[in-house]
Length: 218
Length: 412
Image (tube, rainbow over all chains, first blue to last red; front, side):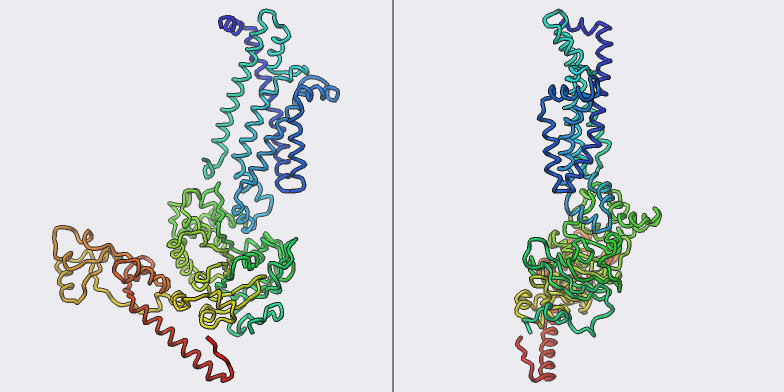
């Protein structure tokens, strides 16, 4: 492993890795934020409307079946290269877990709870925000977490379409095989992605602690 | 007579109108057809619920009683017909405003699990925009009323409460904005029998003070007899088979269906109609824990009782003491004898009292007041006397009916 420590000890690699890690964080966070907003909307719609439920769920499932490489490439003629195609593609991938868990989270809320809210004269909007979403939140948050971990991984492919992030280091390594230092780049990029995933997971643990109401915590 | 349905004669089973007080809820030809079902779930139900009374909807499952109840606050929208509350036709007003004026208690309770007990109770005051001070005061008052000390329970979450305690909160939440009308859908149905009896009694005591107009659904005729000022026995399609007082239904079922539904054991059921407070309790030999042991022993020896009821300083029953317990000196008086169980409150029914007697070893029930202080004793003879009185009254009723109308056939 001596060669790898040497690689990491080099200030230039370190600087590059940290910069790419920061980019990777943005590359994950932005699609997730967009997907949460869209996914929440689609999930609520799918829960409310039996007619729209199946079209919405199959559409977001279809996104995930498109191979990531193909999807990134398909977007280039439309939006060009760089971060934009990556962000769009990652947003589409993140939708499925978020929409699906929003729908099942809302369905998991006890009917009696919703009925008694209705019986006390809460209108549909108040019911949604004050009763249904808070009680569906643990399931929804689990969906967002899965979507984030998924995105951290797939985001590496963004480098192929000229996007930012740790994928650059990995693909630098792949392109230079079998030259010296290629394996180090490959491993370095991968290691930082794994560490990033673990950090995101810890972040969600903390978010759960802070946002899941005490009355429904396990 | 028995084949008359309310479809033919909407008023046929509404009882004698003259006996009804001011009407609070009136259902006019209320009908519900669910899509895809051939016959309506509720078929032209017409009923008047007098102000301040508990009217119980009872009937076999699938008769439409719950659907009927849920149309009153329009959780289920009627297909046709009208709902009049306190003189106002509410069939087409904003349902959310309607519901804030109607307390709603359901079997599954439906407390909001993610917020505290206090906030659950404050739901409707929040919706009505009450200020914090008024809301907090009301929440504490209501928790007190349902027997959950606010300081102990206000900040808890629903999952930290037992089923019985949760239903108390459910009742408090329904009463929060002091609605004139309450709808209760099998409110005590999912609660164990002992707690259920206690909650029923507490609720009746509460109703004595509150005088709400209540529509109450149950499938249990015993509960109907106990809770109802008036009972509507419903057949399929919510057709009213009989709408009358519990006494009337037990002594004079309108038709075969009602008779079958009421079932056998009408005498035992009628024990549920008489409250403990209506019977004169007898006096027990009592002594207080702060009295001198020698005084108690002398009082015991001078009486012909076989046991003495020991009360605490608040006059609450503690233990049954026998002569040997009074004569020994080694242990404190509240450590000897038997624990005094089998207590009933004045609003409990004789049926509850009988049950307590049979469960307790002593064969008597101790009557206590709200604060738990001793009031008197009931024994099995009191119950037998009371049954005899009821039977005599019934016989008298039929004799009078025959005299008044020689043509009538009294079949019962």
